[in-house]
Image 1 (tube, rainbow over the protein chains, first blue to last red):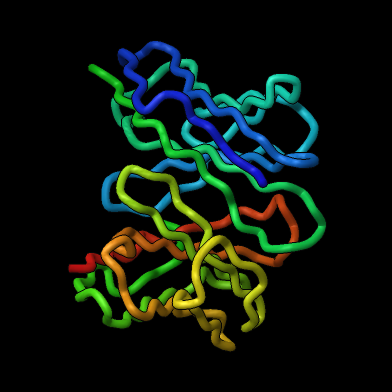
Image 2: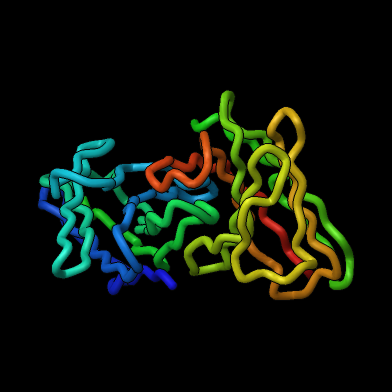
Length: 116
Length: 115
């Protein structure tokens, strides 16, 4: 079975400072990793994904994520936070199995609060 | 916006009733997945439909069922509603199946309250 852990329920960052939202995963085989963001009363919006190759993945709105296979982590980062980045962030994993459903396994989410 | 639309946006039902939620997938997408997001939790995979057939299922009982139509739109049906079924139900569309790198694009969801 696959699982995702987001160890922080909430992360507070001052505007202009760098931010990190942590994610660790457990999966059999090679993982496909995703970050989504959810604004109030909205669905999930795709930010970025890791499939293979370069461990640093760049995504939407200036976000990036670093894949670390030895630590089974996929932390979301941004060099300079904006107030508008305040939202709920979800990390998700899907195992490459070559078969079966493509359902994503999500973490519980991390509230990111950017303070002016 | 993703182009995935869900209806209705909100719904209130009574325990024991049945409910149908609807989803129109993004243009060109042939796969629809349904998720349940309880308050304070991440979305949980219910099942996926590809070319009108259920392609896989998460840990949900048979009273959760679905359909996919030739135009790739989809329905989620829940029978014998329980209080714990109160949640945000999310639909996601994607292109193709059994390709792990495919991005799933989500609708805004249907908020179901069971009283």
